[in-house]
Image: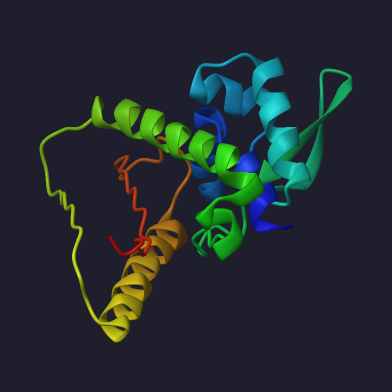
Length: 175
């Protein structure tokens, strides 16, 4: 799948939440809908969009009340999204990029409303650094993301706590 396909598929807050949810366990549209408090039809639609983009796949089909229920999983979740330069820089994808950024902002607002006391980190920076330092930082944040995704457990697993990590790292145009 191209970076543009990934960008389009993830440009919706429900789809971002589905990717997170399906990192830890396989779920059907009905199960995902219940967890996210959206209709089964809405969950099913968003799951199909993510599947077409290659971000999730069907890992099993189970028989439920005379029908078949597909269970989906996001198995490549340890690798953060990397967008091609053409997608990031604009061009034909600038509208999709703007929609993606809005979806991330909406999701960050939703998660921020759920914040509780405990260890946290907030950072914001617009700095000038050398390319080696920049590559090290991008690698370190990618490693932190991979660690979280590898440790993810199904929602509400005893002994776990829900957490959030949002990072958008990118070089800037020179002023």
